[in-house]
Image (cartoon, rainbow, N blue to C red; front, side):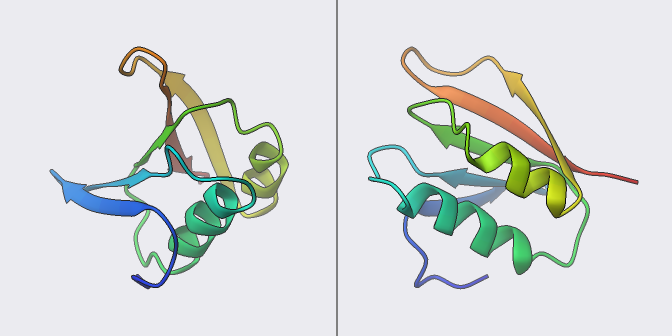
Amino acid sequence: MTSALPGTHWLEKDTLHINVRGLSPPDPMVAILGRLEGLGQSAPVIIHHDRDPIYLYPELTERGWSSTRIPGDPGEVRLRLTKDA
């Protein structure tokens, strides 16, 4: 994973978390897609965002990822991304 990408990321129990809260477009999409491209695994990825990333969904689908909204902190949009079989 490239650390030159915007936002922050960490591993927690074999799940990659990507925090793009506070970033201005297009940095959240750049950070998320850039980190997904560098993954050699199919483990879930959790996205921490401050808005619904409507332009990200078609990009995820094109790359073989599905997203599900999950509970997050107040004011946070949290998504679980999973690699399609």
